Image (tube, rainbow, N blue to C red; front, side):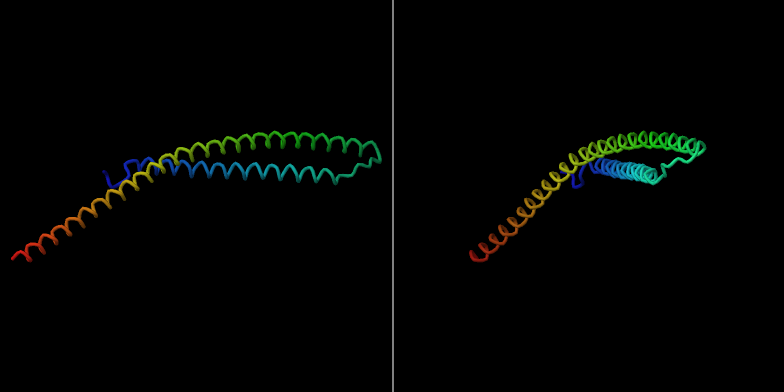
Length: 144
């Protein structure tokens, strides 16, 4: 049996893919969180805007501000939806990469266990040979 795990190169590649998927998931989570924070801050900022209208010019300005805010909130909602979809996709990619890595890690563990059994078997054969030759030497010295 080969001493080195025959699929070690592939396992290394799978671990690299898993790390890249984890990094992408982390970045997607950060982006989604930043967009949600921006949306929350915008909504809180709108709660503090005065609603009292004193003349026609103030009414016109309030209408423009509300239309602008509504547009900005719609853009943020769309960005949030895209960011959440990206996060879901990144999560799925990470799960798939982890599953591919896990299968190879199990094979690597089985290979290591088989090597350990083989090493113990070899060691036992050496010990048996030493004990047998010692026994034969003692038997020959008693016979003489």
